[in-house]
Image (cartoon, rainbow, N blue to C red):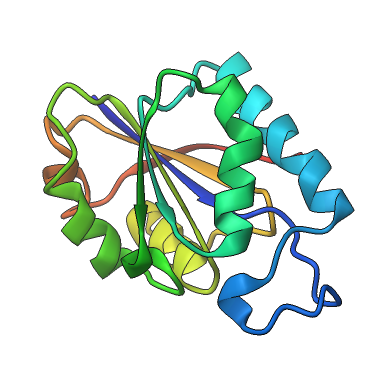
Length: 157
């Protein structure tokens, strides 16, 4: 079985004066929500063993705040997840080792809602800090992402 956790970055600070959208940091609410969602995921048995994240400031900060809760997860940062969707995740899946059962992808909307909705074959809303937990009986993530997956839960702060 493969479990994919599609997590959107925590709430960002539009008034921070960042020079680019990519550089926008989290706001106070986001800094509180990120570790709460990470803890809820782990408490429900959805602790990732691998995390692939956009390299934007807000996703990096979300991951840094979650990292103490997932200390053994391997981390991959990638520019290809910045404002991306299902095709970028499918491309990244080829590098996920077969022994990984729970893979968390951390990114942005609208691509992450589209990703979760496509895989679950129904509309899924992902507000900031929300995480959609999807499962498949597939033996690899490449196989899981080529079909549909079952939505198990939406974890919210």
